[in-house]
Length: 333
Image (cartoon, rainbow, N blue to C red; front, side, top):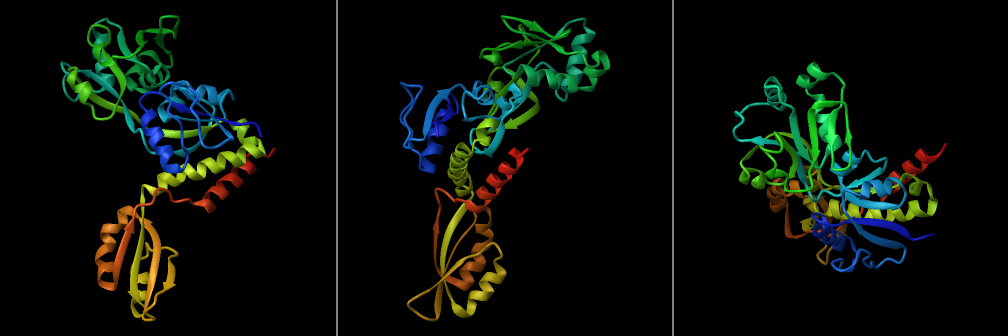
């Protein structure tokens, strides 16, 4: 098998991706001086790219696998297979307007007020396609312009048949554009602090996004590559699952064992082990972290010697196998 070409993101997701991989068992070399970091797997060839580019390169088959934001897959309309939500790098894509706009004003109402003054409505954003679709979805836009496309404006080209709604490509510092260069912005935020500091107010959330693992569809049709890809899925999904679960060990009297298992249905398929004292057994299992606080009072009454571990990974190998078999069936003509 040729090496699996795996693109990981540069920029805001870079540090979190490196930390995530370290929990999975992969060791990636430092990427501050190279865009081709080493990895402790000879079957993988790593490359560092901007997250905006990764969906396109994976879709085109220039990379077999990639990690990017879900927002960029949607923006690029990339034809890729989404294998796993990695649940880090969480952001919101929002609409923000100057604070001079009355509170409670919707985007549609704001656009209508601008058009009523005889002006074109201007948006500044990195997300041209998402912004275009979002503006077109508002009732106020549809009433005036039907299915016509807002005009997209970049330094190299203009596209779209409706200059009354112009969407300008932003190359950063998007929050600085209103009110002179745009009426509103569509931008990503984690806390909203930067938007607030630039005298803007969020009026709507367009979408939420986090880091995802994507694959080229043709790569998944290759039997050898598919096997390797699902090995990687198992390791990365294990980190996601491990962050949500805890591993517990408790000692319980045999006479209380059935009560413990009956009253605590979250203790799925536990391992029961004999102890040196025949009257006691050890119970070993993995539970959802969110359940632990609620389970603790019952465990405390029925057991002793509770030990809790936070696992780095929980590998759901049976689930991965079912997903792989499902992919094989999907690839069959």
